Length: 153
Image (cartoon, rainbow, N blue to C red; front, side, top):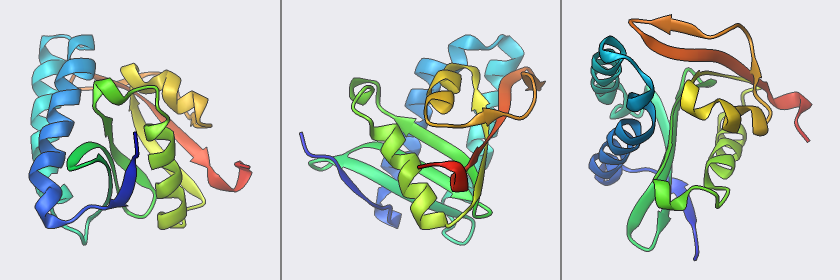
């Protein structure tokens, strides 16, 4: 299986948005209470307009054939706002490679993320460190984390 990593274009946006919503519903939403479920859906939808604007978000997709199977999106040069990989493609190193693409393309020396409870283990595995205990906004649970790119080998 060949994974192709490339910058996302306008024609990729609908597939990317659908992928993010789908993975969010499958893995993140079930870990939240009723208020958190509603809040994360609203937060995701409110971020969609921003993700469509290349002046705000940088996006890298990964494809297998003509299917987009994952993507990463960041803003402000160093804030990782979106990292999603379709479930059948977990375990292939795609998310790690997407983080590496962000590190290279953004040029950031420090990357920040509000890691969902679901993704904590992944972020720790690739070198992110928690900057505080678990927090909650509108019952959306997350852990603020950062990756010092300069300390990565």
